Length: 307
Image (cartoon, rainbow, N blue to C red; front, side, top):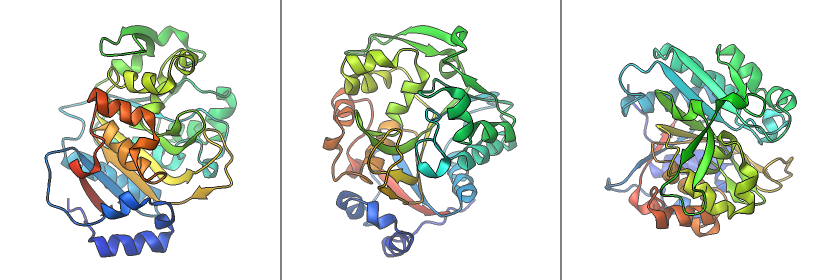
């Protein structure tokens, strides 16, 4: 299917009209210039006000670029369902995106989908108030409360880890045909930002250890173990302060999804919605030094797409 690519002029006009440009840093705006392809990861930046249309375009892009591989039976989706906040408050992945994505996966032939999460707030409130429990139910997908279902934890070695050498990770993230990370982008008081890489803290048993042992290094270390097939960052609305829980008085509405096979590249681009440089987010500079993924926006193929 044809992807409607936008010119720099059209994209910026649409971004300003939607208010997205109010959140876009100078480095991002500079990359709105059309460029020749480079030898680097693809990052698709999908803009639009209709969340189902955004996911439809994301799925279209994904299946035109390898999809989920041959005959996938199982798919694990990592959302951010950590907080008892409403969808509009932006602390969790938007439920409308989740339902649309899971329904699209089923239409594509995926037989079993599951959403495991180790929430920060009580799951009885976090899963319901965020709308994600209902979103999963609409798509006939179970949500697993990992704080309660401890039988799923398995220990894994991280031979490339510098601080994090071992971790208990929920088995669904390691034993699946397809792993997709769908975090929300927002401010974070301890990690500067939370996006894709930090979202794996909801996949491990002891995130408190991370906070006590160089959080930024642990975030990067974990990404040497957990490597999603696709990352889809929810930047439809973003908190610029008081994250990760909020509520924030500084909300912006870029109406974007950021899609990539490279979780570090996806985070690096998304960080420019908040800061002028990845240097503001230490786990990104660590990921660069560890060569976990691409952080240099000039070395990415950034595709601007309207949904």
